[in-house]
Length: 306
Ligand SMILES: NC(=O)c1ccc[n+]([C@@H]2O[C@H](COP(=O)([O-])OP(=O)(O)OC[C@H]3O[C@@H](n4cnc5c(N)ncnc54)[C@H](O)[C@@H]3O)[C@@H](O)[C@H]2O)c1
Ligand SMILES: Cc1ncc(C=O)c(C(=O)O)c1O
Picture 1 (cartoon, rainbow, N blue to C red):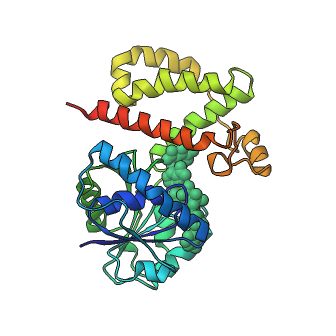
Picture 2 (cartoon, rainbow, N blue to C red):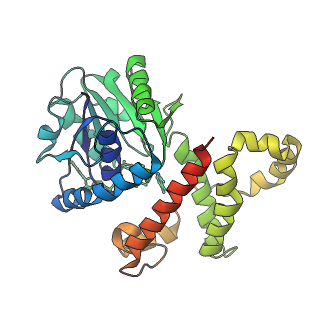
């Protein structure tokens, strides 16, 4: 039985732990914030219900996650440790050192980092060849694609082990061939987010209308036809004509939108704080999450049915 430990139970933690547990792994998890542990514990039954509805391979119970009192307790005897703490390099490196000191020589240490180069994380451990990126997408129990990223010193066997694990979970591993910041998913997503925020800040479009435009004009299409295939569908000549005048116009800002920093400064972090770019009524968050989860399940089943 493969033993997995998940370090960090925030937005991503419960869903990842549940998917690993349903895949038949023995899962332990920990978080330095007791409230995060209790929130994750409370989320597991609903997540398990969604995985049942998706019909993913069930080799275990998605709610069978053991919550450890410390990182050392969580990682003891683990075959895989997934670091899942906030996106801060120094913190991740500190946690990586702590993991490295507590695991066996065969343990694979993975990170769910959104895009910090894996090479920077493996630089602080004694067996860098056992370090690999395992980048899930939010919500992790509903999005089947996981990026597998090898750092400069990652062993091929480690990368291949991770690909096989993800396939065994019934999910879609995508091997990112170069350890670039943001990997692939977030480089594309953040180009979209940068342009979207610029268009709203420049008064070109209202936020709600931007979401409608991108979700139904682009997201819906890309769910069925990926960008590379879409070029053939649209016509490479059309792309060349449009890109020739449009590429010079696209946002190239290297800083982060001031609108984002301003809201963070007011404690408006998004769903995690009850308000962000949008306001949410107190009871709305739960129904919003449930509605979105239902739509994720319906679309994923529609896209994967033969
Ligand atoms: N939120 C997303 O959409 C998303 C998607 C994919 C990947 N990621 C990445 O996954 C990682 C986690 O993201 P998140 O959104 O879950 O973050 P989060 O801030 O919601 O949760 C992080 C959790 O880590 C805990 N933590 C902090 N220090 C710790 C330590 N030393 N030991 C154990 N727990 C500790 C915090 O208490 C918190 O509960 C980040 O690297 C992030 O970039 C996030
Ligand atoms: C805004 C944003 N940033 C990072 C990630 C993943 O690393 C996501 C996501 O998974 O959806 C995201 O939405």
